[in-house]
Image 1: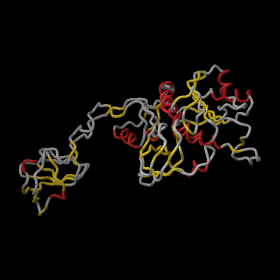
Image 2: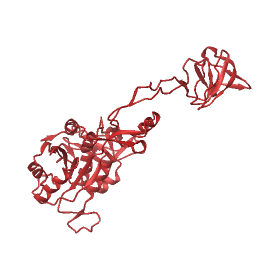
Image 3: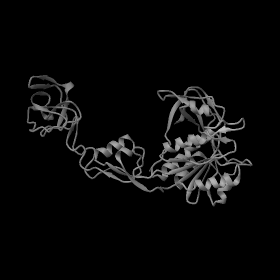
Image 4: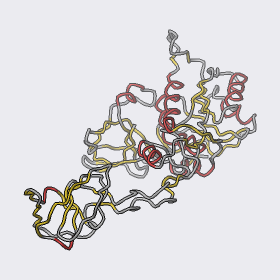
Length: 393
């Protein structure tokens, strides 16, 4: 059955569940993984009232006025005394606010003269410092199961002293290209042959999605070869097949999968490129039959199959990060399909221009683009300056 793009993506997110085990790794290895445990603050953060500015710690009630400077405090120190009426303490960013002070005045708003400081403006309690526990209280959850660990999450783990992290295991994803015309990239192809670019590009995309790619031998256009390759692929955590899913005489992927008891969730999606996209489950493993043209393979993986890899390794909310930009020139299409077309997004992200492409077999067009136009299937015309959806490459 043919689904719309949104229906197909929703189907994948509905059907696929977390199926990977967990492992404990070091903090240095955590980037790019998916968190499998809730992380709690080991103490209040900040653990003391922390100055957000270089300046003077004061009592707000004393301002405006001239105050006696009673010392200074730097980050990494504690002021030994307190701030009394008519006093101020010079303070640096990150330093603990001394007892008695309830505001920090930025140094730019002060005039220092010896041991006196003149402040000609008022202040409010709480100005320019973060109260103890403002960011998190001891015992509060600061990171949650299913979060993708990036640089900010690594910083949070380091902050709370979590040097060993429980994460979901990376899925092993089998990649099988199909077709008698395919030879390996290291080989010299004949006039009737092409090099296997799909397995190479899919391996990169699988790695970017958090999986471990396992490139298997090419399945030839013969039933037993196709079936054997599929059976090998189903021994991993997920199977990606490239090619062999159209309606041609030698498109044998669906036949072989059916013979292995596959359940098909859909076998066609109203997108371009990539309409003959297959998704299902066999022997308790999810599989995708991706169309064989390189552009179709890249697009269908990135927009639909990637979400399945992210989901089985525990990512709570696989997202397709669509932006909006203004068209640099008019654009039109036939209605009925959601199209993902090679384009160049300007360096400031404001405008996008469709690129010349000679179809989904044009690898050069895919390599030259840095984004894809994403069209509304019910719209046929866009004028220069109109907003359109954009998917970053």
